[in-house]
Image (cartoon, rainbow, N blue to C red; front, side):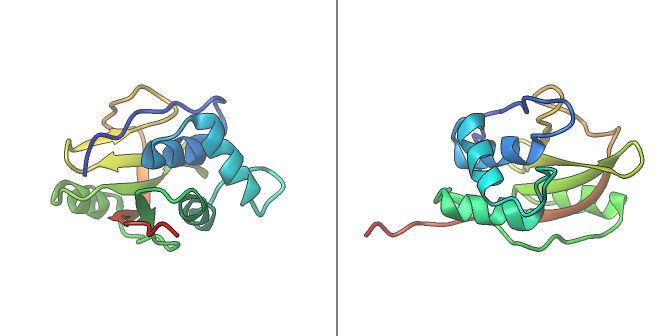
Length: 141
């Protein structure tokens, strides 16, 4: 599982979930943002794991994520991600309680951080939880 095309979020303080949906789905940021906002359940426009999961399903993305995060310690998440070739959606925490989404590309062992540069070590982030990406084949009607 590799070949995710990097997408950058358009605003500094929001858009990371939509950018991750765009990378996973292989679509533009604008299309992903439209899908995530359609499924958004809060008035701030912040995107949670259920929203991302629903958006990926609606978009018939080649990968899906569970609507539930695996939450373990920062070091254990890093170890879990580095010990497998599986890719994952990662929820991080930076500067107190601000949450942020990134994509872990398991094949190239790198984080794709939509708010920064394409390849990041994520050392400035506390990893909070992750959801593995699962390949799905959509049956055409």
